[in-house]
Amino acid sequence: MEVPALLSNWLVHGPLVVLVDGGHPRHQGLPAAAHAHVLKVDLADATDRVRLDDPTHLIVEYQDEEVTRIARLAWAAVFFVAGRAEPDKVGRLLLHDRLPACFEPDRAANVNRLLNQMGLGVGRPGAPEWNLRVTPQTLSNDGDRDDWCPDRREAVETLLARDGGKAIVLVDRTSRGLQVPELPQLSGQAEFMVGRAMPGFQVDTEGESLAWSQPGPGARLEFRLPWHAVGAVQDPESGRGWWWPAELPVPFRKPLEDMEELWPVLRRLDGIPLAPPAPMPRENVSVLSLLAPMPTDRATAVQRLARMGVAVVLADAHHPDLRLGDTLPGRARVLMVPLNLPGSPSELQIDDDGFWTRMPDHDGRPVRVYVPWTAVFLAAPADGSRTGVWPDAYPEAVRTALHALRSVQRSDGGALPVELDVFDREPTGDGLGLSLERAPDGSFAIVVSQPVGHLPPPPGAPPGVSGRALLELAFRLPAPDLQ
Image 1 (tube, helix red, strand yellow):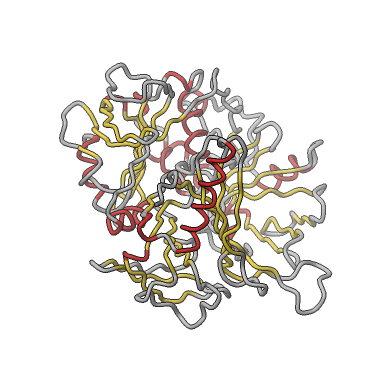
Image 2 (cartoon, one colour; image 1 turned 60 degrees about the vertical axis):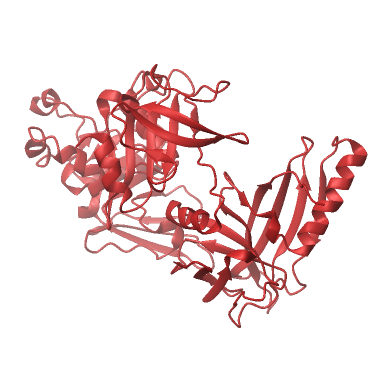
């Protein structure tokens, strides 16, 4: 399928990320002062900021400083697309013949490193690298297998006995008999670090499983990985180790299965030596995101943000049509509504007058709220990269604070940063804290912090003491033009 048709089909099911070779000579309309090896485009829809029907270029509207511009990106430069191929199926397309030269000397490995750093790869950001490269010549050389290690227990013991005394284990999480603590930071994790010399670790390699315990929050964490689930092990210092093709997790195994001539031989082999780690790029690879301008219509802005990922809406809590649950005390001035918060169902429903959603109360329980559009004064992705602001809906406290900061700017010429607390959280820790900041360049930011649940008490804390999990974010505001 051609890339334009693929984008069109995948956009029906959700947002897309497109990576483009920034050095292609046929690009048009990029920022004059900017150069990047890779251009990143996030797409939520194909209605008002992107055109897919041009035969030679992907046409994208983006925000350059305060100006909206149009970029024409050559289709021939698109080398990666990630999105949803089907409603319940994530799709990734990597075009190896288009990988930019900036990733030399090993384009494939260095692209995978970048994808993992961006959260678009098969590994987590900062996850171990697994160099599973083999050639038909390597596999046909039956007489030279001295460095292979078919037995998984022997492989792990060999690494634990080395100077570093550590091993990274890659497992298939769908294998039977796997016992891993149910913790958010371990959800879906395929790699685990284990070592007898690691503080607090107790490791047992006897029996049918690799078992160990390690310190955890409030209690020890117990792990048991059956040997049959282990797909690879490596030394974290050198990247060396061994792997077992048939037991690799699906994201690692699928590219190998696609090599139809190689896989039938590969699947019958055990303990293949890991290849040395590929060399890093010869230069630092820079990435430029062509960020979409925020729609001026609040409903369109929130709908787009909801498709793109975690986002935040700020609303005036004094608005007469705002509806809050009974367990949301303390948020009397400004309401911060998170969208797509991990682990919290949003159930977003948008109509002409506002939107319904679910958000965590102060104890982390989801409650239903209704926010009218006329109460919304800010909407942005959680990273603050783009901010939609509607000054006509500023709460009175925000408007007064901006007046005060503008007066300071006039009196000192904008030479010093200024911070002004609009209001603090209540003494109990409930409610939302909000402050305004003015940087030396005259730009403004709004900083909000809000509790989204309780934390277990720290070790040794007196009875009755508990912590609060805070969501703290900062968003840029336009320079105030208030009369």
